[in-house]
Image (cartoon, rainbow, N blue to C red; front, top):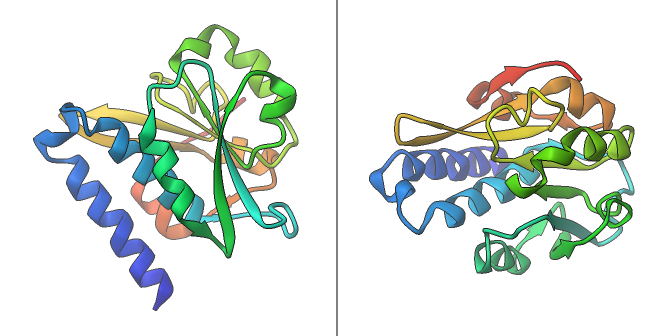
Length: 174
């Protein structure tokens, strides 16, 4: 029952993202909703969160208050905490790391520093997932879609639910 409600929520976000509102100022609110739903459909290693699911933002923060709204939610009984991250050491302490397009020149360095860590990396630069990120947003015909790099998930000991994978374009590598 809970899975059905979660899937319904994710599908509602997908439908909302397909409207023309996506191109407007609500773009980052929609992406923040996606990020929250991604967290619900990821299997995290036991004991990883210890009461908090930390969402870090590395680089220029285009999300503003949209991500901060997630702090009123929980994931698997863990409170969502949003932090602006300044270093890769701090990034390794997050469960979700939103990597800004401003960090694109450092993607290989970021992914190397996080290899083997249970950090779900999410970005919006074209090719983000193919370069080694876990989930990349992809605009498609005025809609928002996403790619999942299953190899990157495995390297971080993370597993996406079959329902989440069925909504994504799967990429591998790095």
